Length: 349
Image (cartoon, rainbow, N blue to C red; front, top):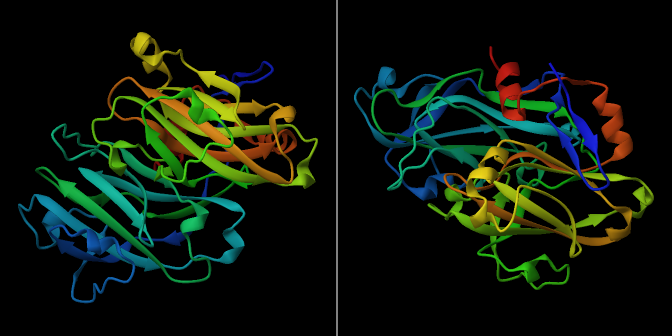
């Protein structure tokens, strides 16, 4: 097995992942509230689900009183997690879901796989492993998890796996960037500007595909933007941006200056070439002269999708210091596979 880490002024390319298996913090196996049909109000944490039936998770719903049922159904459950876990990366593991899912935490969409539209795509063969944005959690309080499932035919539901919430010591603890980002369809290089007024842009969750967030069938360009404070206490440190896996090509700007890219632009001229990068993790070195320490900084990501799913769809997403990265790199293992394959390995119970 091999690990390739190459630093060339502005870019770190790494097929590396943490070697230490995540720790299960919350066991979500057991009885969940369940209701057939579809109503987006079911994602609301204040929705009264007391009249819903209870069924086992994981298990197919056909074996629990719903034989032959195909279509939409919702699951809901509650959990608590300690405030002491704020400094760890939290992952929601839902195992296998047949066929399509959309997951909401305290009313916030966090991720989903598969699509149920004119371009229906089943994801029944994919394990669901989703990064949980810390900003969506009520630490030391009640959290409501709601899962919308669509089954086309055959078995349906959250069917298998050691369902739960897992924590992983993170190599990007300095600044967590998972959560809401600004988003705009189309392409305009002026959108890289640090002082651009993006208040009228819509809000999307990162990491998650853009098709599941109101942009079904979007192929081509989209831009993401986020503003984040970089503390003066790390002034002088070399910083690394984890921007996850992007489908397909990207260019990344900080405060209006391009720091790195993967793939080739204009994207429409290199569709086939760019498709090879959809599963690559992005780790980019941030030049010190582009950062405003002790102040707000703007990160802008230009994305071109050649077809199928698109966007910043898988974490980790955040910023760390080179010192922290080097320390955690000692616990990394050499791996030719991507981060998703590794997570599937460690969750292969």
